[in-house]
Length: 335
Image (cartoon, rainbow, N blue to C red; front, top):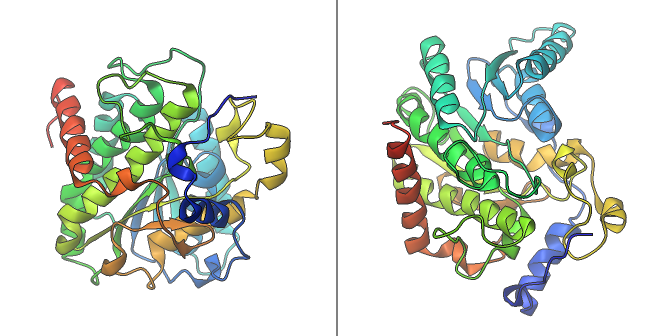
């Protein structure tokens, strides 16, 4: 069992009500069948060899998109892409396809190589789904730059990926209907368990594994909102989503959960097909407009409300952006 304290910030009745809505969502009212034709569109889905990423890549491709599916492992990525393309071959009049892009988000040089490979092949990018993430790996693990592995993988890597792809995203906004270029960050209800103040920039390795996971998920949310502030007027819709309590490989290192043993939480887990709904909705639905840029969506494909006020702090948003850019400079990467 994981020892996780229930934050005082979540004890307000209004916050508890929001948490309840995420943990116990009503039946979906939107389905993937409502995704419009994506023929001619190009997407990147990170962590697409399994779980929510695989399901999202599969569905986007089945609606006509060319999907660059990223994976850390060449072998696992190749198998996932082959599986998607085999399924597409059985569909009538399908123009979609899946293409492997090897990427390790904790390694900024790997991110740079992946972007260089992508931009050597494509001149447009309509959808960037920052789906990949890790949750509570063994203690002490850090990325190549010495940053806590969860923050490096869940926040810094996706930031750098997005930052390097911004020229392509912005170019695409000039060639496509308004509001159809999307950047979606997969956050989590876990952001409600972040430390007081949101993110401990002075020591990202401080605290329990779950607290560090929570601050990384707040980071995804904060970054999505800052991206919206900077680029919505230029045609990019940025959103953060909570997929819900989904039965995926993200639970690999977890022996307990939020405030209850994992055996009990297992009864509250939903299938992957449900978990992919909210991110697919944010990535594709015409119902999502510029007015929704910066919004937090929660299960299932609903406009939600954040659990922590830190997500609305403009100073924190600016600080995270500046911190990430500073790490890029340290790695010798320029946008």
